[in-house]
Length: 203
Image (cartoon, rainbow, N blue to C red; front, side, top):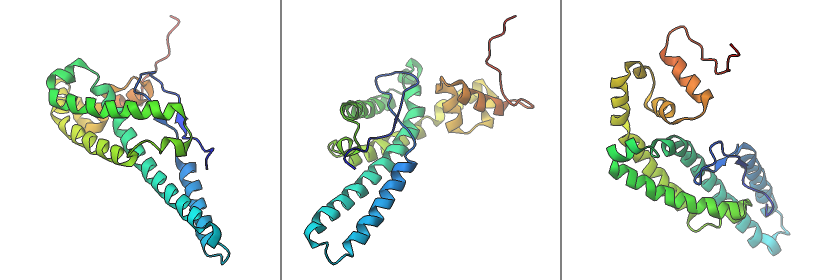
């Protein structure tokens, strides 16, 4: 486990606060398999000499799984809120919320720097109070998502067809630079349209 690295994806936008986890399914499966093996080892009558090490590894893996679960929640909300709160419009309309977002962003950037120094899973999870930080960030981002309802409704007044989308879908539509996501959301608000073709025309 000392050589297992955190699965990271290359950022699409190359921003200083952009670090995206890849799929964690395999990591969670390996943690689960290892926990089963450790449990079986503890049932062996000859385990006493290494019982303490086994129990420590089991506890460490349990904590890592908790961190990764909280990180996944954070990432799903961060990818929506980060582009939204980077706009001057939001900063002027919701200054208090923008200030809270900047506090989250500051903590997030410190974790990114720590992670990029050494992406090995156990080293990343040595970040001080990592699970508590992610949990606190998640609570703040949930509050910020709720506070954006008025902003979303204002956009709906300008374009009533946005009422066909959920709040999160509107935020994704407003904040994304990914044409695939834009195409997926925008096609829902027009009848008989499956999507838009973004290919350039030679004519």
